[in-house]
Image 1 (cartoon, helix red, strand yellow):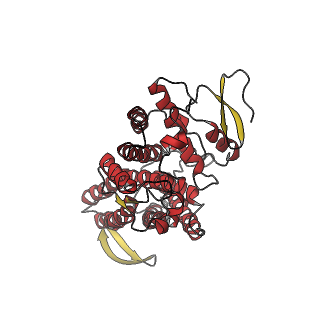
Image 2: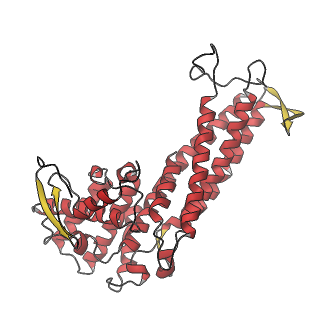
Image 3: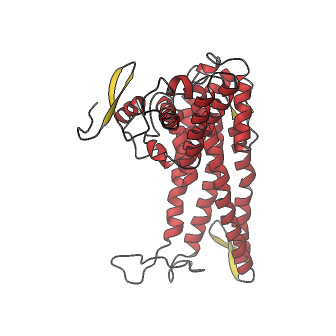
Length: 381
């Protein structure tokens, strides 16, 4: 693996051999291998801060449980906990550069988190980065865990936090439509079915209808997001619980609930939960329902504003920019147009999530990384 000769490095090793890691980064050898193996997309882990925070939440919960069970010293626990809390505060996110889309069922992402937390903990303890005999990414930060439980649990934490944020923006949109409904309450327009004139109505009724069909989806979003609160921490490899001591799963789950303030629950069957990614299918589907409704609203706005002389021209959308490089005075409905495109992207992401869920094999779904990327991206869009 090549490195810039002018960059000061430290030597780190794994089962494949030794690698020179730049001294100015908190990640280590396995993150570097992931960077080399997966230059796949423009979607980097650090672009999804709530997911990075989810990783820190899971690692902090694990550290609390491991410390109480005597598996971490006081010094190791306190340093790991401080490192995790710093990440949850938004620090060190630049050291999560791996591609969201990756092979290995999320191992690169899990090790990226383990290495960043371990090296920051070493600094807190007064050691040099890479001196893993004092705090190891695998033996201490990843103690009692596997990527099979830490990674999906972190996805759940990140997506639930994303859901709460998405709901705020979604409610603001609904409230905006409701304000327009009141503003336009006394403006008459023609109601239409099958593109033909039907009966008169008010423009306020049209906008109230937009608001109501969107408001109906809040319950569906909440119901789908509720599944993210069930996690499989303690499942370790494929749900067997190997390398986790009795009581760890329950204490870790309780710690994560205390950290987040959410009603976090441990899955009843850890083997089944470890291979089941259908919660992302449910949430992607809930977002798709909203996307199809937004598409209908935007299509209506574009059609009713068409013209202004030879279309319906029933109302004017606010002019946002000149609409042509050659036709003077033309203005396009650019905001509904871009919303249509976003809706199509969300619909496409839902299909990707569905196909990936179906692709689970035996005791694990190796397609989780792109499923997570699609869900985070759709919510952000």
